[in-house]
Length: 356
Image (cartoon, rainbow, N blue to C red):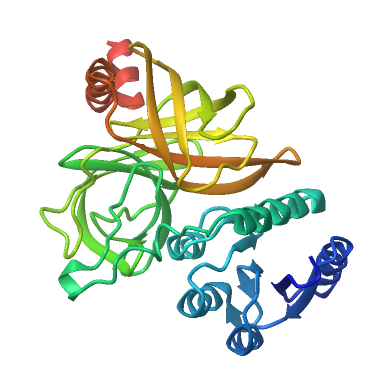
């Protein structure tokens, strides 16, 4: 492994020393860049086998470093490190493409395990990158876009206020987001902004209703009639609980049990304790629990996205799989769940009905 070179982009001197020393115990040559400018210069001078990138840099941006890295080497494996939850910066980095995401403070063994997995995967087969390997657009109107989806993080912007928001639910006309709680005056209009694969997207919206909760606010907003260069998601994700048994093609071991996060008519999102390879084919046996009963089916899917995170000191991987289509009965059950959730009373309405 002596020929493998790792670029560590980190401005905290104690942390860069700990990480670089740990990498050298694996026999990896590690170079440290402590600023955006230094990192870009090193990337321009030579090619690396792996980059470990801190999102926040003094006097610079990790996102800009990643942008340059993707322009120079679209297949460079990248481990993103951040002390922050999902923010606009994290969303921007994920849109550019990262192979693993670790939150500070992270366990050094988790980092080394992720490094080994990425380098081994690169040695076994050419890496894939869902975002950067899309065909180059022939005209601005044909650029790849990313629709605002359930579970995404976006920003509500007003004349004097900006709020980070989490997309809660949506249908073809309305969608709901959750933000921190604010006091009067309450805005009646917002500008919604989020980061897609190729650009920053915005659209104006009107507030249909807002509900103040104990520590947050739920906003019901109007979907735009049209968004420039953006189309609505055809198959929305439906959050569910449950489990899935996963068998990856080419592996001899028995099926692995995974935690189920959401379903769509063309996709399944799960959490695994072992990182699969992008592009791998998997057989799935899904058992989803919903308020309308269980949804159970078997299907095959292709691994399209893998994001690493740490839970209680252990590495986990959020995996998105694309399927040809769920079985007919599962599609019908999923649509019934969507309908029930979109027509269910809000907590305030439910309380009012009970008081009557």
